Image (tube, rainbow, N blue to C red; front, side):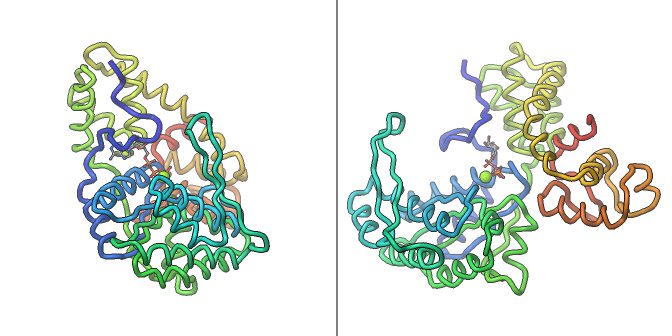
Length: 372
Ligand SMILES: Nc1ncnc2c1ncn2[C@@H]1O[C@H](COP(=O)(O)OP(=O)(O)OP(=O)(O)O)[C@@H](O)[C@H]1O
Ligand SMILES: [Mg+2]
């Protein structure tokens, strides 16, 4: 029997836990042509949720295109991603593809056979088109393309905060905002996992995107609903998961969808017909082991004091990180250093301040830090 849990990206038809309210709300905003800023810590299910909303909207004939800005390093690359995704989306629809070729005049499609996917579609810019001009033209092309779409467009910009890492990012934000605000047949969904960085883009008065959408926070999955989901999935996989163990898993990972899938995946592999506490503990160890390389990368480029603060907060969340007692107990060095570390760690979304307490965002990362 196939393992019913997923470690990699969730396929469209895979069982999805709850999120009905969220899908409905996103779909409604999409239909109303509102722009939405969807944010949460990493691995909460933003991308999966956006894809579900896209799937509902596309059944209703809205043109839905997903674009991911992770790893973009220049203004030209942003324009290129927008163009290539639009070409890729329309390729299977002959008339639309011709239309895009006509409208996106700054970019030519390049089609090459690909042994894996059958066809690889990339784009090439026309000579002389670079920098802000090509971004403006590409967004204008997207606007024109959408104005001809009968039911409008739903465009998802995933990992949108990444554009702030690019040199001249404020210029890029400015260009994007001034073009996007003219796109009245497009609803944009801006997604990001570095919450402070993304929210600052949309909520700081001086920033171009100021107040240009609805802030939409995605919460973790409700642990009771999640436990039921787990029991059902194990049942579909022909195994029995007692309610208490399902509840334990859901609570231990604070309702994080990614960790739930992963730990359940390991449990399924380890267990017999009926899941035991021991399976849960062994799977938890495997989970920690499998996340270790990523956690190591996360702290690799941090300064010693920043790591010391992370470890301190993992062991002891606090409302008073600057108090002499806390600083000396955890050997945190100078106040200035701790202030700088807090700012940096919040911008990376490694720590958060909630109800006046600073703590580590990711519960599994926190466990790993306490073992350092
Ligand atoms: N509602 C859900 N039901 C079941 N599993 C889910 C659900 N939402 C997300 N997942 C699981 O969590 C994993 C992470 O989800 P996803 O990639 O959508 O999160 P994300 O918030 O976009 O993460 P990142 O911030 O890293 O981009 C998915 O691969 C899937 O296995
Ligand atoms: Mg994502």
